[in-house]
Image 1 (cartoon, each protein chain N blue to C red):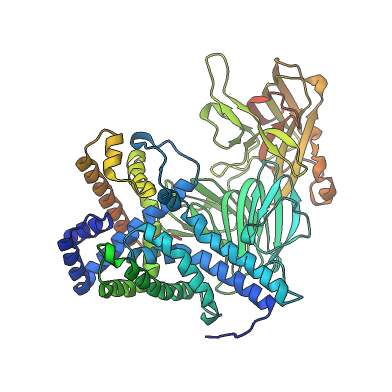
Image 2: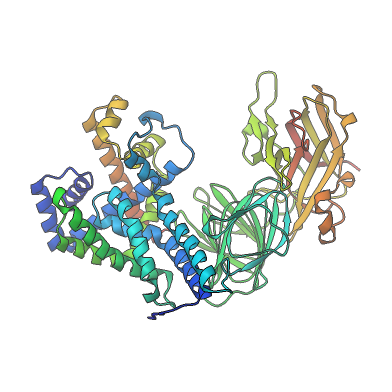
Length: 188
Length: 443
């Protein structure tokens, strides 16, 4: 680990480039990690910029020989504290899990970073196997943050039935991901 | 048990848990590692679906079909859709700030990232997007680049890049290639054709080429790739390339003079590069696949047609072009010889000069130039069917490649045909092609 108290402009420039390259390569993994600790993707949106800046401010503490995976793990550790801080500011008005559970989940999530990455790739492959209407239904809900009841009223279907359908599609995806993972990790 | 945890986790993420249920979930997660694993799996699944939905939101709008809904009214939804833009936006801001700071703190500060490769050939409209979102379309030979993305924006585009270790990659036609080298060369070929001659790479750091359907690992070899949304075709000329199919992670090694097609719906089997063909015919009746143009289906009175699409050249002129990919992944390479003739049929709304050309490559996969025939205006009759038979010896090197003519064969014969294209240069003359055929004339 190194800490440079002063760096020349050229070194600083190189440091920026390296940080950008590493962060952009890790951003999805960090985001997914943070997502596993927060209740909604909107919370993640709110926090990601803070996390990015925090990582940048601490970047001279990151091992210059560290691999991209090391960088992702390092960012996750920083993110964990940012998540806990963020949650405390929100806890009063939300139904949220306890700090103890969040810490346990964070530890688990850090240990399964590569596995999670493979799972997300498998989700992409599995989504492509859905029929178009099913895929649209699942993505519409997540894309717009819209309620199932709104979609139900627009498509003249019963809420309960549509909710069951979404659950069924999720099961289908979950089974497909498990199947893919059992065959070996999908490609990157 | 696992189903009840799964159900609780889903209801948690859907924000539908009661206080009691939340306590139950909290207790389970605190005491049961398996429950936490299910929680992680479910959450990760949701995160991945959110990402895909977000990417879809940033792309072109799609017909939402059965479950259509109006555009979101709330700012929060818009913010959700734009999160990737936001997430990287601050990075761009940091870079801008860093360059500003660096310019004050050091008189010899670099103004761009370290370069990794040099442009050694460029032709036709191209666009480079570099670090921090810098975009340039004035690429020229000798220009050094720090990585980024090269877009070939027309069928005539061609780009050759030499990395600092001497490895050369070439893209041609409509293509998109992202490249980087932070100790390991990593390329992403989003679309189009790429050929490469790669010098031996460091141990443990092979060049990696990612496509939508495969990952190629190259230690040092010559090969060419043709990729589209569904498949990646690889022909290896020298050496060996390892291919990993994305859909199932299956690996194969492709030796010299062999080929493979990586697609989810085909066997990943390695076969010898087939012998060449000397005959090819367009098949517009089957749809617009492997064409570049405005495809019009046939009617009871008319055959299907391929109209021209405009593209802007590097000199800011608009050319109207229709083109056909000829040598394709699942068929033998189509080769010219001294008896080759090209038959072109179609129509022109207005009298104008017609350009018919071929983009060619050598049997080793190197770009061999574009050769064309110009049919003068006197040979065109507006509103009359267009029907030309063009002999290979009349094809000459595209004048825009004249400065590099020593790098190309002197004739269009004995070369592999990548594509055949027709245009009316800067005139929008209503050119539409109904068929193109490449064949050998009888002796």
